[in-house]
Image (cartoon, rainbow, N blue to C red):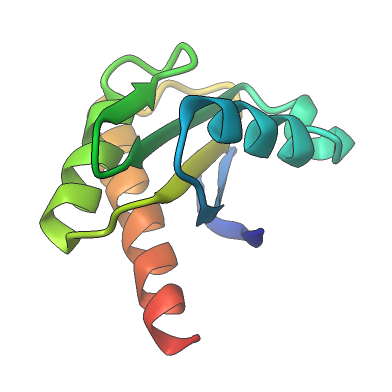
Length: 118
């Protein structure tokens, strides 16, 4: 599990991104459960995620409408399969409007760049 914490901050909201190998919905649920063992992530406002496998694509907005699709599209463009990416947001009290999608994209981009370096 790769976790990049405190990567984006805007108007009080903070973002992290994490991910790792994953080939099924069951593994995705296990990944999220493991991530949320860290109290900080369990208390997050949103843990949005997407997963692409050879057979299917899965996503979950976790209340951040549309964010799962943003992650999924980026995984498709990257050609990344059998890998889950989770963008975590702690709401800071001010609504971000459309900027929240930009932050989700930036978080995934940071993750993918970090993955390439590994």
